[in-house]
Image 1 (spheres, rainbow, N blue to C red):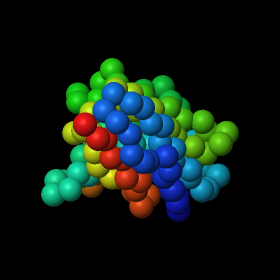
Image 2: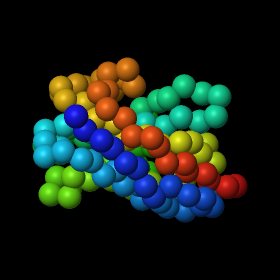
Image 3: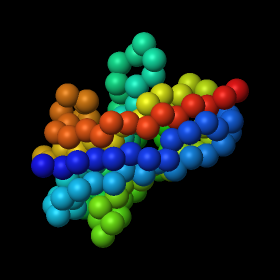
Image 4: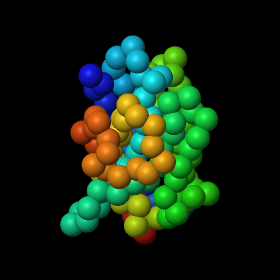
Length: 124
């Protein structure tokens, strides 16, 4: 069992930055593949970024490549999402998720555990 708690969301102007954090419980955090997803009002939840359990591989949605960076600190049981050059279309609730098995496809339905999300609002 893994419990995930996101933080770091808020209101920021377009072009600004935020860093989201996801704190995980459990001693086996380092064995989980971790992802960030977002859900805008009226839209389905979609993939943003992910990192493999050993932080060897990272994956990004095309819309955030070059602007967002995912990283993890296994000693702190925490995964981060550094968000730069934010755009109004990045406005959404951002969720942290964990998956035990390795995958190269990151569909929301494939994840095992979810946090409750943190709201990011980007004003124009």
